[in-house]
Amino acid sequence: MIGYVMVGTNNLNEAITFYDKVLEVIGLDRNETIEDDYAAYGAKGTKDIEFYVTKPFNKKDATFGNGTQITFLTSSRSHVDKFHEVGLKAGGTSEGSGGERPEGSGVYYSYLRDLDGNKICAFTNSKE
Image: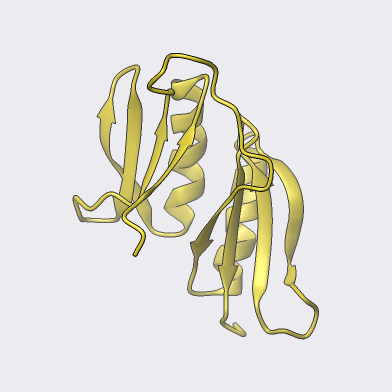
């Protein structure tokens, strides 16, 4: 159903640095860059695009959507934790470190805000 996801940025170079580090943890590589426009990410070794970070087409400031969240499926709890750790080191802010939500559900999440305030999440259904 979903073709790809896109978030806006006001500083593409900083956003690329952030997302190169964070998305690498979950197996996504930057596979296309148009200078001063956007960067695209997809599964390592493919040309598929699953995620874009872009300057807004209308040339106005990028803003985050209140209540909007981009969530990435991972294969393990260690990936969820590493996603959060790397995101913080890359300049993101924590919206909740790794943990089951709701407690006892078996679903493990962590939440970050990127450099532009976009809320991103990594999760897994794995117990490992």
